[in-house]
Image (cartoon, rainbow, N blue to C red; front, top):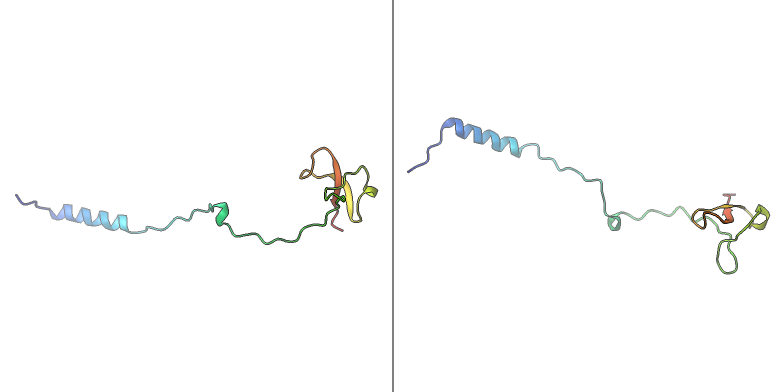
Length: 89
């Protein structure tokens, strides 16, 4: 037995193939794994006011700090103890 296709069925299949094949654009995913991200250029580290043991200087007043530093809270060092922070001068 031989399969017979009607012109309408063939036209419908042809339209479906063309419609599905057309306009297939690649969608860009903005996520990039951390190990594949480009390294950020360092702007330059801020000067540090350190003790002889290379630890941040604890303080109560600005005068206890190195020149260009102020006494304040540095959340990267401690959320409760004041340390000398670079004032950008």
